[in-house]
Length: 99
Image (spheres, rainbow, N blue to C red):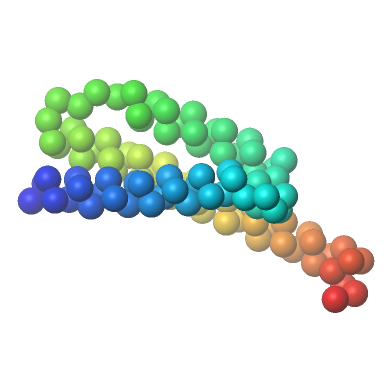
């Protein structure tokens, strides 16, 4: 049923949004850095483009949800890559090597 699928997608979207808010609000500077801020901004702009789209029926709403989830998947993949790079760089610092 399309309605149930849309509802499941909406729950997933809400969980992703909550995850992003937790990153924004995290006091640890390594989670939301000068490197990741532009990435967040870039994807939030893309999400805004999707968010303002109107839908005429359930199929359009489903399409909008899928577009949103695809953008979020790209964002998450890029964010994970940034964290990996950042982690690798931190491992090269003298402070880390002394641990």
